[in-house]
Image (tube, rainbow, N blue to C red; front, side):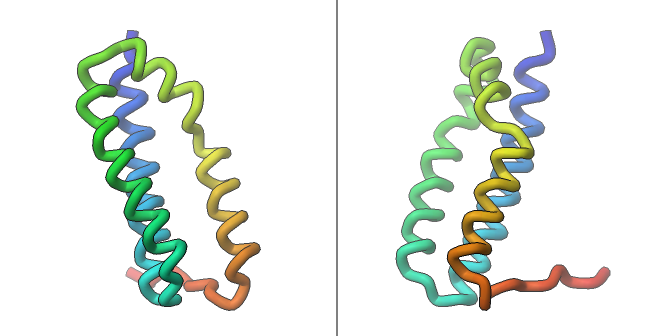
Length: 91
């Protein structure tokens, strides 16, 4: 019943993560990572309206994208760039 709301919440988390990876790629001057993240951001943005208006797509999005998969992507990136670890800003 609330698939679209859950999918949109996960969409926002994933988008935030992708923007963080984009900043990391810009700081590290990694051209390959930068182009890949920009491509993913464009693809991810095209999903936004589909998630909101189509219940089936929202349901599938919930199944595929979880916080575990986001953390796995982050760990893979950190393994390939061990010297590029950035500490979060203090508020």
